[in-house]
Image (cartoon, rainbow, N blue to C red; front, side, top):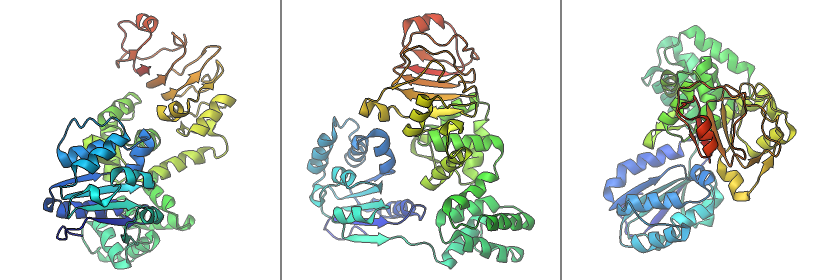
Length: 429
């Protein structure tokens, strides 16, 4: 995989989530990037594509990393394709394209080998082997679960900070490693959870695992969640449902206004391998951890979304608003503008659509019409981001703590709240 050969090579790494594809690609990248004229690591392509609806930002990052052009003047996807194919032909580059979900993403970032100079290496990580075949990636490495010995070593490093456990923990460690089934993420999370705990707590943890015998990743990961304090659980669920990829300071301000003490709370989640801080100081978590958090919320009310604490899916949000099934359980509902704006979807809700949601603290929504006005808003609101808010005043019941700045676009609202600092961040576009 090194840079010795002059041919341009594409290398694929594929396997199920949680096996360490990104970690392996990052290690290789760090080891050999110095051998190239330029290098770029495009992380979480699927996530960014789903959020933005295109690969333009990734194309800009690629050009910026490899050509050191801060202002690369890419206006659309085809500008990016042309610039990559034209400007990099003579450069030997190392490019990692991480977590690709669709072949079109590859075609727009590394469409052809002749886009890159002799000796270039393009490493692609994905969960979809067929995607690599479609893109004619000939060198494909399937990432397997760890062997028992590898898994035991990894677990011990996380649980004991050494490669061997103390004698009284040997058998217990073997049981945990067997249960994890060689999945690196599960080993890391379980090891962190058990670190520093006495033998009786290890035994209790294993007994709890026996009561939930399904060898499912989400169940394994939830053990760490169960050990959190209530405020830490709330922070974890908020990040899993709403704030993955957002800047730490931005999320901390919102969580602090909710009374969750985010400085210590986020720190604990990082210590427990439930949360990480990625580039640009953004909050991040593995897809399996995110799914675990969302599954916890779904289980609060499997049949009726309006009785769950958090709503993030378009279908659930539409159901709750159109059927007026919201309840006091709902604390947050956030949906990116992209979902509505791309399809020009505009929902209509009754004046009492939010009246039952007395504990609602986070609301980000777009395109919701209120033909008869709005009668009630929760006084617990700490974030209100409503693209296309259809009225020029807020419900009269709204009484908010005056501590955080807000922004509004309607002159009458600005006049109404003139000089007031509200404990919500109002973004009514």
